[in-house]
Structures are given as C-alpha cells and as structure tokens.
Length: 331
Image (cartoon, rainbow, N blue to C red; front, top):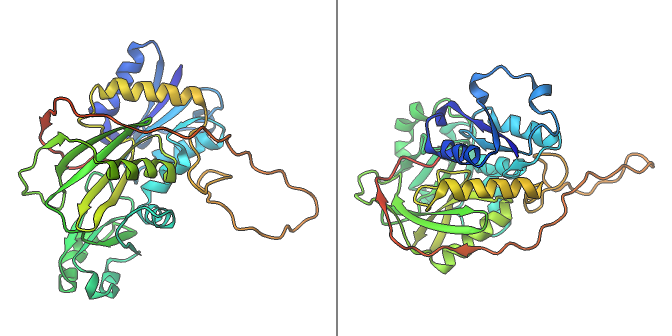
C-alpha cells in the first residue's frame, strides 16, 4: 500500500507516529510524509485522487494539517480517522455540543470568544476549568477557583481564540485515559494536568465496565476508529473531559504494530465510520429539511455504506509497566 502521513513539526521526533511509519515501511509499504507547517504545497498535486490508499493525520489541533486531510477526503481519498470525525473532536466546543446531544456524560460547557466573558458565568459553576477550544497537549489549561481570579488570567488567555469553560469535576488528582485501537480498548491511569504535584506515575490499569461502555460510545458518536478518551471518575460517576484523534497510545503493548495494522485495515476498508448524524460534504452535520428551490431533482450526496456493528474488547492488564506521565497526548 501507499500511505500519506501528515506530520506536524511538533511530532517530528515523537515515537508516535514515527514508529508506526517505521513498522509500515518494514512491512514493505510505501509511506510518504508531508509536513504541513513547513512545506509549500500545490494543493491540486497534493490531493490527487488515487495517489495514496489512505491519509493519516498526526498534527496539533490548530495546525494546517486538518485542512489538507479534509481536502484529500473531498477528493475521494480514504482518511484515518474520518476527516469529519477529526473536525468534530478537535473543536472542543463542537465536541461538547455533539457529546451532549448524544448523551455522553460530560461537564456543562460554556464557549466564549473573549476571556473577559468568563465573568458572565454564574458563580455557582466555579471552580472552572478553562482551555482553548483548539487546544492540545495540555496547552493553556487553567483551573479558575473563583470569579475574582479572572483578571489575573486574562494575559495568559489573550490570543487563544475561542475558549471553553467547564465546572471542575472533583477527583483524586488522576484521570483514566482509554485508548482505542480499531476496537481494542486499553486503560491507563495518569496524573491529571490540573494536579502537577501529584506523585502518580502513568500505568496500565484494569478497565471498568462502565468506563469501557463510555469509551466505546465515544467512538460511535464521533465516528472514530483510532482515538483516546480522558475520563474522570467523579463523585457522580465517570465523566468524559476530552477526546483525542490519533493520540500517543502510551502504555499500549506493541503500540506501533497494533496501530500500523489498524491503519492498513482501515485503508483496505475504504471510507471510515460516519460520525453520528453526519452526512454530505466534509465537515457538515445532518442538514435541516428544507423546501427545494427548483423542481428539478438534485442528486443526493453519496453516503458511505454502513459498517456492521463494531465489537469492542477491553484488553486485560498483564504486567503494568510504569513510566513518568507526560504533559499530554496531543490531538
């Protein structure tokens, strides 16, 4: 197979995706690497239909890589994950709206274009977790204990664009990261980015049934095949606080080989899963019914054939290796 990986400079030396690229190459596949942030690209040539069996994205949320992936998808190329699914989780305000619409357990979410608007959130919602809507790798995540601390935070949030704010979910200083590799679920416990002083070291842990069900539902709702879910075990049960497409897959056994096999399988299948409610052009949600403006029939946009229901498997923990927790997974 011939594959195209869109890899941001930020991940040039990271094990993920470089180890996956190395594994695919060792298996005899051709992998072309495009660095969207450092290359002059002639779009008509980059997205030539049929040049690659699949496109894979590993970039920061705010970078130009997703635009290229969406261009490839619009030209008919297979993408890993579905480009609409990636758009749906990389915009955290949009992700919150989709998640709430489909019943995922999430904190209440406020979206605001200017940090001064935090002052309009009811005092009863504090403490708040505030972060950029296009953030990744733990960038600019702040815990705001009370409204009188907003003024101190304004310089740090200036220029971050759209923000989201969510009531803080009480937790012991750890969260559960669930990785999904084409239907296999792996759980790790790690230090919460809001509790950097915690002595917790990242390690694999057994996956509770309730959390496994939520992680599987996340894949169905957003239409993801390779993804990570951050879950807090709050006083009222598990709560989803973040979803990442193509994360680091730390602590996943034989991660490079597993992810490489998943990429090949998804490339062979063709179009990825359609996110719940998404049809039509890349990035579009299900349209509201409208009266036609003309009598002539308009051909419907092609919709990928539905896949059989996916079976998710929680992979048991054998020997839980431990490594120091990193700052975050990225998007």
